[in-house]
Length: 115
Image 1 (cartoon, rainbow, N blue to C red):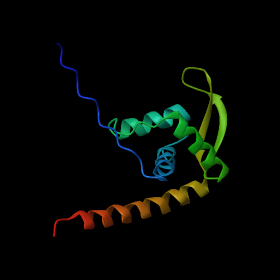
Image 2: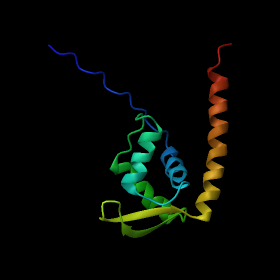
Image 3: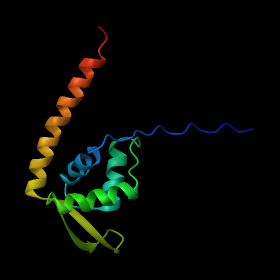
């Protein structure tokens, strides 16, 4: 019987974290939805697998909030795709979220430190 390779560990996102990751990904330039999910997966060494059912509602929500904007363009494979880009408000929101995230990580690390 052949040994199966261990399944990769997946990490669940804290509520609100996906929005921050989408904004961070778009900081590098416009991207279509599938590309955003792939960029998050790659940059997390495959630990974060963003499902379509989570990603696209987040994109719509961020667009409604004015944090990202979209336009239809041809993709690398010459298919019609909706590309998203960060707005000025999105850049400000990303900076605020990164500050809050940094504080949260430092605080949790302090609590988790052995006495």
